[in-house]
Image (cartoon, rainbow, N blue to C red; front, side, top):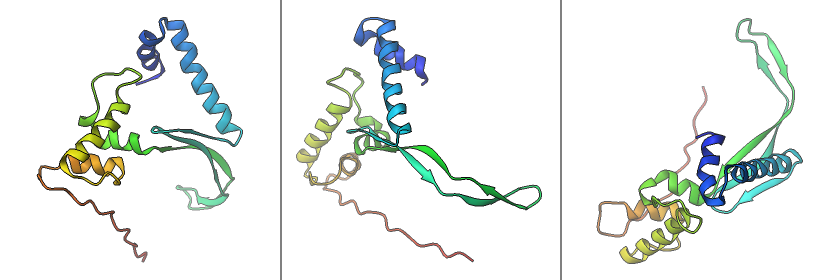
Length: 154
């Protein structure tokens, strides 16, 4: 999906292509300006945009192997929110509808209802409830966090 596709999706909701273009451009402009100014844009359920500083370091020229100094930089970073990660991990739970009150909002409601109905702990994060709700087992599923293994460098 590109910007034109996004504008086409917003257009029926706002009434005209010009208004849809203004809405999409305004949102992008606001996010870019805030992050460029060192701020953070957090959209609940979607994710967080922020600037990430990278320290100066020494790289290597791949042809010669010579050390090359790399200056410090600041790059944009996006961290997806829990609901966004849940939808990507389990897209079957997402409604076909795309209205403002539907879609992801109903995903959260549906995951909570399914969790309660089949006995999954409602305190589990949404993405763990979604995994448990789609499990073929009729019994409640216990989802453990993956352990971080330390790799040994030789």
